[in-house]
Length: 610
Image (cartoon, rainbow, N blue to C red; front, side, top):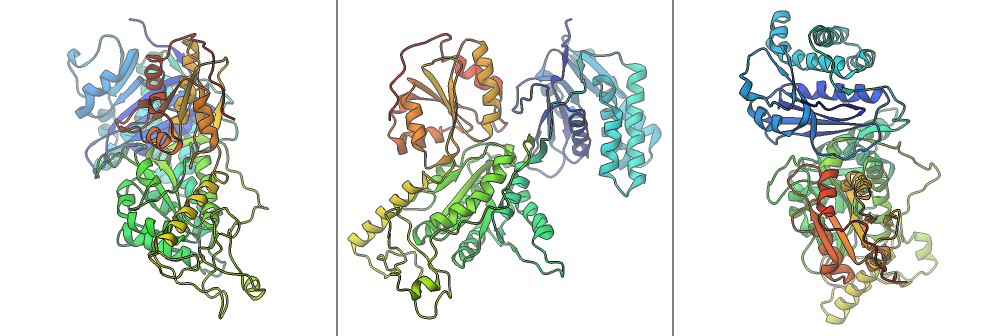
């Protein structure tokens, strides 16, 4: 049998039982590799039930710095009998299986083309510990110890992490160190070296390891948000919780006075209502939710659009419809968010690719909401939001000031400025607004969700309604110049093929493009970062005869949005769709595009539209 050999380039997948305490041990394994200077990408795949169902944690070690899922498993740590057969089947031929060998299993339960590494974890724990919970918890630390020997993890890095995790709790730190070395020593005495190895490197640099929800929450803080109203829903809950942590640290005066308001509302309708009320009053406010919450918020979002009140919604997308798979990832709220509300509505969407952009877009969303006087959606997904990513440190310009948009002041009113709440004075579709209490007798208006004229006076005259709706379209057109532009990557040679992608698909997309080039398939790539679409999107499509659109949903929602909004022939856009709830992999993209794109196919390009 030929075994896999690799240095700093392999995938380890842990199969555990939810509630068994394995999460901290698996993170310890991942972070110890980072401390050795080797890039990793980790993915937590867990059930929506509280306890007892299968959970998986995948760690991709990539010296080359690939941060998306690769596809395939080189080593499985199988600790869940319920998923044994599925976990064994995922291992690549020549790969490795580490399992608890306390109980003897028949040969038929294994595969002949993998190396089996048995460690009597339960027996070791039972011999050392009497407490049931300790036996369960330390079994996890023991397999990290065994892996540290097999793969070459520096034990000093693990001990350093344990010291940091249990700072001030030396008894716990010592017990975990002991369990770690028990597993490591047993493996050193009983197991032969394997073909997968870790070699210290300096490939991490100054990058940080953080999840997108925490990053977006910090971005909201830097963006000036002082109000958060939310209702708990997976996978967005940790975003609101992170915002509260940040506020306790940065928005609390030395005397203990809190300069923020966080409201856990009774439901999603109340939460978005609170946000819009705060935005009307001049505060920067947001809510965090997921698909079902967006569905419930539709009418209030329509009010924000029509009455033109700033609001920000962080939508951490999950698999739907209905309850769907609450702890699985998708990009399936694109159309629901873009057209949220009844009647003719269009909303700005920001599409970050990683935690760094979650921070940047999280802050920028509040400037956009004030500037455009409308709801801004920041479209994360579970993969970005709840998983830790290796990314560049966040950057902030201390000279940056909040852009409050067109706000008419008392001084302007006193000077004789004409105030019409829905009056377009300069052709960009954006009217001036006033804050409540701006002036004792001027600048007041009645905010309503019904039709009105340019001076906020109620009317159902068709001409006034059409005038207002056309102005809202001009404002949406103006948004094109304010949102982040798409990012283009040119292929190494001229090509008839292009690919459009967005969000968390970016990391595996980069790797897939490199692999396709090895196969002789060259593609220009465009990462869309916002809706409304910049004119660059149309230019990119017109420059290629075939454009693949890669996304994580069933109905090709981004492709639909492009064809609808840009007037593109749908036949020009080939959907590449992945929607089983797991993050898309580089292998999937490479295979799916490779089946439809001919290698070394060079034809005259379409003329780029000027």
